Length: 169
Image (cartoon, rainbow, N blue to C red; front, side):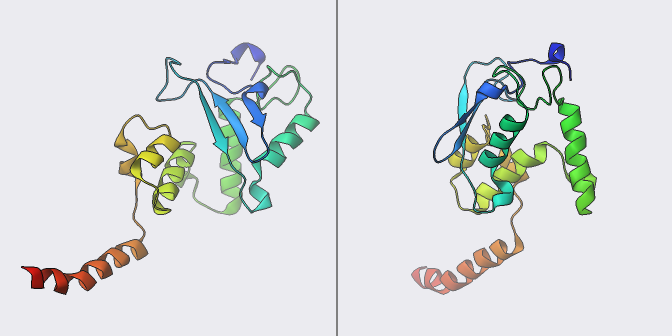
């Protein structure tokens, strides 16, 4: 994408990233649930143990390899050009294709949806899942798919407590 197509209200700039000791902060001004930029949000991204997914490491590497001004698009590859939404989607598609997974099962929305499902499976409260994904409604619940093992656990809990509940009746 050329700089003329870049919208700094909707797209991340280099200076929208802040490196802290324990996490990376991402400053976003626009989202599906904040289209009029009424709120500005810093999103902390904490490191994971697997080095392959160390966002702090890779962002710092990007910043050191590609030298552009701080108000340049986050995913710039030189002073005049940066990745567009579509080029990033193509890159994501290529990565998914190379793993052998079906492309139809993945989209950019999959990240938001996947994070909601993962947070829910970790046992986070609905309000925490909603906060994490900046969901303006409980619509994220439409994406929750309960793992079979979770269903078995619920069935076992009902079975175990059934006798004691029946005795009370």
